[in-house]
Image 1 (cartoon, rainbow, N blue to C red):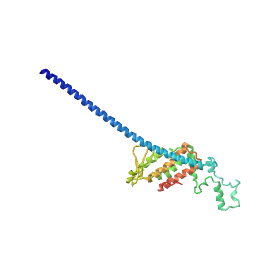
Image 2: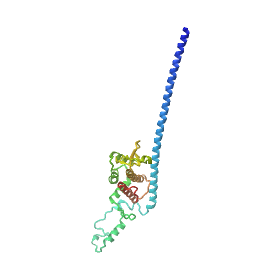
Image 3: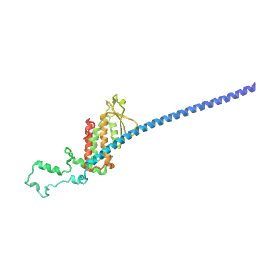
Image 4: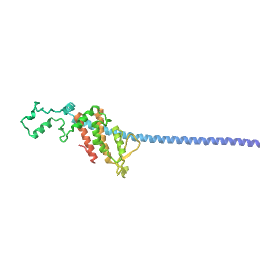
Amino acid sequence: LMQWNLKCAKLQKIQESLDSEIHELTASLFQEAYRIVTEADSKRLYSEKLLTEAKGTVEMLQEEIKALKLLMGKNEVKVSPSRSLQEFSPSKIFKKPTLFEGKNGGPFCFLNTNKKSPSVVTRSVSEHDPLVDHDHPSLEIDPICHQEFTIWLENHDLTDIEHPFLKRIYNEDIYPCLNFTNTKLASLVCNSIVNNTIILENILASENEKAKICALTEMPRLCSYRMKIDNADQWHYISTFCRNRIAAICDLFTYLRYLAQGLVQHGLYDAYVEIVRLRRNIAFVRLGYANYQA
């Protein structure tokens, strides 16, 4: 009987040891399974995030390709051999006549008694003035801005915002167009546009049924778009009004970037006229006229 009891006690210890090992093994298996599921879920979320960002990047590149094709098409139509960089060089455009130099270059020609009517004088000046746009009769070239653009084009640095040309663009176009209630976010948007790291995305119709607080105006609006800046994870919902302003500025910086990278081969004059057109679009969009093109 004593041997039987000892044998039972021994078997009892073996059973307890096996139960303990099975319990530890089960717990270890559950922990490993939980870790695998959690890791797989994290990878899935990360893959979805990369897919969303890739779609946004593809859409942005497609828009840039469309804009580039449009600009290249305009380049084929608008650029003419007669308008070379030499014709519109600063030394020729801003040549200052001397006080006593007349039509024939002789001294004191202003004393000539042969008078012309004002209309004849005006026509004679406009026909030889390189700053008068004969293709766009309503366009008067700003000689100061044109000279600043000519100087900037030599270095084409988009980061030098203290350059007179870029400073004029910022003060007259960019800052007024990005004058929103949320000034901090507006400043981040401006930097993101310059760095080409902004993403604009049209949201689904189901998400656009109710008014949201626009991130820039901080007012309830139907926010048909959302944006992401500087590769951040957060999306900001914005109204169509804000989106149009941002898109107009992006168009201007995209063209300036193409000029700097040599992707468009416009002459000096045609490039300046295109910039004026893009600046005019910014002004119209700032006033609420969407999709203004002329």
